[in-house]
Every structure is written in structure tokens, then in C-alpha cells.
Length: 148
Image (cartoon, rainbow, N blue to C red; front, side):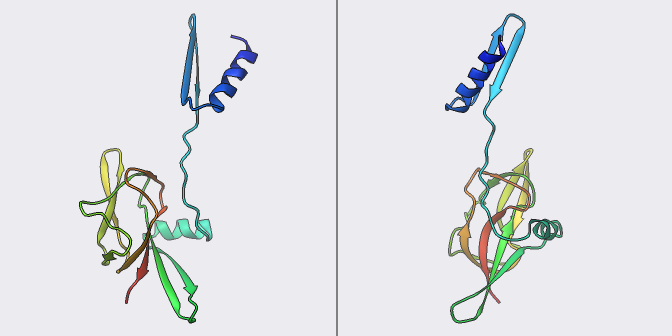
């Protein structure tokens, strides 16, 4: 197979919905694969500081001034490891109340289920991940508004 032919096949795979193409010619074989692209929600902040915070096992917290000038306490529930997210028996949704230490889901990694726990009590304001999607270490999964 000539280099020009291989380049044309790479372009064909790149511009199509083909995920993988394998060609065999005699004892030679060539495989062209599309990269697996995972979209991860973007959030503002210092990535180094957030990674250190996640390593310490504490929640990421963002403070915002509301219109009345009150301090709004927002806490992220983050993934404890890399794997696939699954809701618990009773899925946690927007408006649900959670207590400190409550299991809000699990991350499955190599057939091991790692619990995702709420770092403090509050009300779920946003769910950032869906059932069965991959999660990265330290990735925010839920946003809760802390309660006193």
C-alpha cells in the first residue's frame, strides 16, 4: 500500500462516521481509528489548586455575591476517581436535599464501585453528568447549595 493511499484512507475515516477501519493486504495490516473524544464540562478556577483540593478529599467551593450582597455558598461534588458514573438506587436530581456524607452515586472503575459522597449538607442545584458517562478524577458531578 502506498503512502498516498494511506493518507486518503485517514482523511476518509476522519471525515466520516467510521470509528475504525482495518485493511489487510497479504501479511500486512493497517488500522485507522477515530480518537475517543469525551466532553468534560468546563469550570472556572485554578486547575492546580483544584487538583490539590481534590487530592485532599475536600469539596471545591465557589463563592458568589448575590444581587442583595449576600454570600452564596456553592459546593461541587467531584469524582473520586476515573471511571463511569452511575446513580444510586434512588437518583439524586435538581432540588433534592442531601446530607453530609450521603452517597449520591458511584464511579465504576474496573468492576469496582467507588462511592461519591456529598461533602456537606445542601440542596442540589445542578446535575453535571448523566448515567453511564465517563468521569475524570476531580471532575464536578453535582453542584449543591450548602445549607447551615
